[in-house]
Image (cartoon, rainbow, N blue to C red; front, side, top):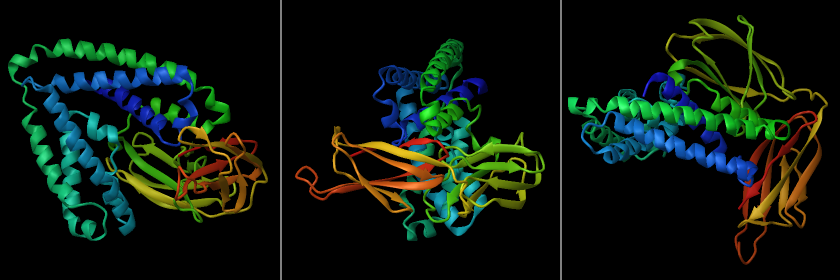
Length: 392
């Protein structure tokens, strides 16, 4: 599969992941047109994946090769993510940047690329294995498993000359399905426009993912994550990040992330100016960018003077698919409380601009003896309506 097709597939997978996020599923699953188009997207991605796996399979064991790639990618993924947290905890930004891979890179990349990525994750985890085990980040047996899985996949990569004659036919099929995938993706984005006004964070995140040319960190120079000083587990969307020297400004995604590519930022030192509603402005100087390397920064925002704008938060709570009345809903950090009505709905009006967490608690019942709760983030803008649904 050529680079152009790979980028299109990766962008489709990135959009798929946004839609499959647990916080977003309730927004669109009840809409038949969107659900049908999403199923078509899932199926087309799977078809392309199978063809791409068979492209370099000269042994006639495509299914075995696919299973080997799945196994190694999943193990690499479950090592890489805790390893990135460990790197952040010890302040090793270089390590965090090296192994902060996207899922699509580890599973859908070219064979030679994914093997290099898996091996890098293995080697870095192996170097820190004692600390990772002591801190409870990963089970060290996963590191051994990954090396075994890398070897198993390499054994299935053979492509004898007799197989090469069929590659053109496979590539033709891939190109056809890539075009079909593009059509499905465009239709799906058109359908998601209904969320552009009432749930812009979801819409903008899906749009950005589906339209992203590259998802590999090798193309990213700087990744910024914005968090609240009081609720550091919440990443802040809608933050404006501006590179002063180049006058390039971007707005953070629903997950509170801004990325700048190497095309945008050449090697050198830069100044970042940060602005967000209800937070103090910040300036971060001397951010060093190196060619071919990713730099990751976590920016902690401090509460400042409110802009005075207000919005609202509403949602629905369900239990086993049915409306959940009398569920306790708490809005933090204000501590405001309310309860769901008879149809499981709740709302908070006149909420000041800023970042909040919403907690839904179901009281004990015969079907739920211990009770249960969930907490989700909410970012309120002036005049905005944020929908936060809960499903137990």
